Amino acid sequence: METRDQAIQVRGLEKSYKTLHVLRGVDFDVARGSIFALLGSNGAGKTTVVRILSTLLKADAGTASVAGFDVATQAAGVREVISLTGQFAAVDEILSGRENLVLVARLRHLKQPGRIADDLLERFSLSDAAARKVSTYSGGMRRRLDIAMSLIGNPPVIFLDEPTTGLDPEARIEVWEAVKELAARGTTVLLTTQYLDEAEQLADRIAILHKGRIIVNGTLAELKRLLPPAEVEYVEKQPSLEDVFLAIVGADK
Ligand SMILES: Nc1ncnc2c1ncn2[C@@H]1O[C@H](COP(=O)(O)OP(=O)(O)OP(=O)(O)O)[C@@H](O)[C@H]1O
Ligand SMILES: [Mg+2]
Image (cartoon, rainbow, N blue to C red):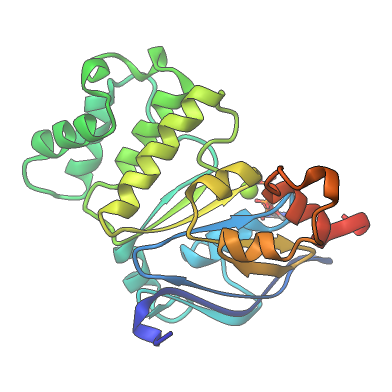
């Protein structure tokens, strides 16, 4: 694919924390307007990748660009086109949902912060709870508000670091709907997850980060093709991404 069709390009990324060599040469591309899932277990280095791409952390080696801006040399450009929703919700508990949104819109010097807030509340099915303090929200509502906040100013690229970790099944589905909505509007989404089913549900492409490298990168259909042939008694069962993961990572996980 042409470079200009890629919202994110990552080449040979390396990062160590003292003697811990977390990223050992990470390569991937994310097409504009797609949802890309970076899948990996605890400590695989997902947050490290996201922090490098969002200019919060410097890589030791390799290059990365977001919307054509180099993360190392054009950090200000990158920051203008991205938003980051971290692994832990950043909403203010004491304020209402609407107040949180208005606050961020004001901080970004946007016109009509109230209208922006109301639009987002509507979009994320939070209108009924708009005036309530966030401390009364469920985990799923908080996460949705968090994602809504990251959309203020319409960033073309959004990073979601483990958007559903710790949520119950119902809340996870609500967040998935919100993420699908984003991509439907043309936003490029890079999300990290430890959940195979989440990647399966949401992503156009899935990359598995394991022992510092991307060991697989493809569509769900491509990943499923990597599986060994199904045994006779399982012909009716569709292989899950979990099967793919285990087939690839195998015993050395
Ligand atoms: N600032 C730091 N100093 C030292 N080690 C760190 C630092 N940040 C991360 N690490 C280590 O680097 C490894 C990768 O961490 P990272 O947070 O990127 O993983 P992750 O894939 O996001 O994990 P999780 O799924 O638990 O969020 C882990 O072993 C972690 O302990
Ligand atoms: Mg993490």
